[in-house]
Image (tube, rainbow, N blue to C red; front, side, top):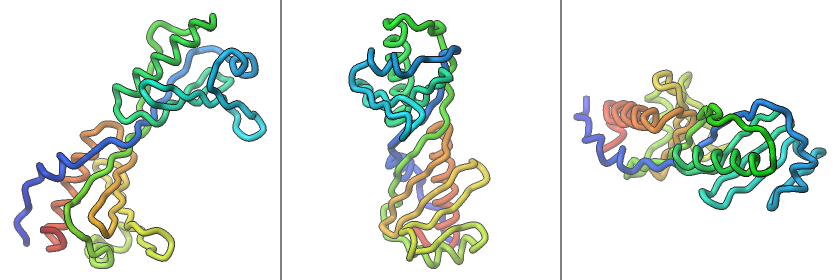
Length: 192
């Protein structure tokens, strides 16, 4: 069994790429009227059932649905997604829509990139992790997909050593997943 390397450099390499969060204003919205009142929106109900509203600062996109549900994506931090949704709420209030003072915001997914710092032998990892625990079809997709149970996330490992961890609810999920990956790879002598 290989000695496990210091996890800190791997944790430091983690970087949030996207945060997806949902909220709702508690009432139906006339999207046609809203599309006319808002600048910088895309609204084509035959293509997509919601209004696409791009937020400049912080950079994010809000998908606003007739039901009053709002999905925000594209922020690169949890604070950023909260700021973007606060901006959407304020804009809607300015257009005389009733929005609660503090609508609930639920983080649905955080996508985090990482780097294990060396090339990975994905074939050996697929065998070492167990073929039932991974999806690896290099002809279809250049990464190995490893679904962890705790935390319940999916880790994509690329031959370059880069990783993408998705399904996180908080950054700590990506940190825990990276710890698991480094430990498993080290135990199999496939890292370090």
